[in-house]
Amino acid sequence: MSASTFSQPRSTTCTPSHAARELGLKRGEFDLAVHLGHIRTVPDEGGGGGRRVERAEIDRLRAQEGYPESLLDRVRVVGTTEGAALMKIPAARFTRLARLGLLVPVKWYLNRYRAIVWLYLADDLRSFTSDTENATLLKGRTPETLRGQLAAGVDLRARNWRARHLGFLLRQAEQPWARAGAVAGFLSPVEIADVVKDPYARSYLNRFRPAQPGQGTPGSPAAHLAERIATAQDADEIEWLRSELCQLLEEARTLFPAPRPAARRTAPTRRVAAHPIPPMAPTVTRLTQPTARSSAEPAEDPAVARVPEPQSGTVAAAFGPDCASLLGPAKPTDEPVTRACRAQAVRAGGASVVVPAASSSARRRHRGPEQAPPQPDRGLRAWLRRRNHRPARA
Image (cartoon, rainbow, N blue to C red; front, side, top):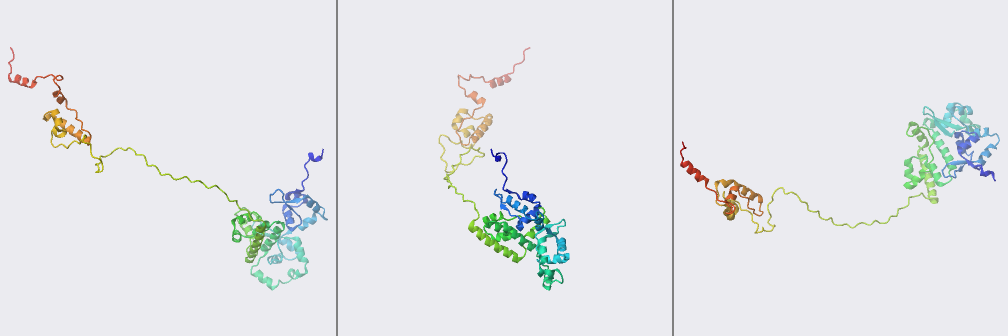
């Protein structure tokens, strides 16, 4: 049975953090060594977009003469004071040479007072000092042309750092879109939108823009200062970056156009034919007030006649001769019955005439002989009794 059954095979690559620990470097020193080309990296096969270091590269660095001091010396950086001491010149002269662009910084950071601290490679300072052509700049009076530039406020340290850092990024980019993203990383969003009109290409380009080196919380003064350092400021620098971006975009679009969302093919929707709205059902409402009949209404049924308006105070005037024959002659005592019948006729409003019920006295008078026996005239008898008063018996 093979040993690989119980032990995992050794990976051929490792992460940058693991490689820095094996080489005895800090993470900042390792990144600088990668930018300078001292350590070779390969793309991550996992598709995450990062970089990895092969085991063979680590073995190669370890096998070099003077390891690890030789590797540490090549990535050593110094500030203004230490750099001036290394070049054996005053710190003020060192600052003037850096502002004129003769000394190119390789890194920078913000101290606790939000002041920019520029860092330079020790190898670059030794090379500048050893060059005989720069002897007049290290000692003696500064030339008049350079003094005029300093008086005008020239400071090329940030611009030189951007140019050097762009070279680092382009060295690691392996495809046209990545190179275009590296150039776009030093332009403001307004300049990028002016160059790249297509929103899909601009969105795809932003995927390859490198993260700006800086410190501080987004939106803080330190973050704004770091963004200003990492963004081109001079007009000629902006114009050069724009032209480079246009050229790289043309090359990238030719090889691999920016992806676009696929067009959605949907079936045509069937529209339902419009139908007329049915009329609303009639509703029954309470008649609040009697209205007059229009001329278009049909004539009244002759069998149902409206009760004529009474003209006198008699029952015959209210209900006609038939009702008068039934009720007999009107008496003064029948006036309330007449008024009630007249009010009921008026409330009928043109409906069929219904003979109202007669008073009790009228019903008693009009009963048949088999229904109402004759009653003695008590009124005459009482009158005769009062007329012929009999004396009381003794």
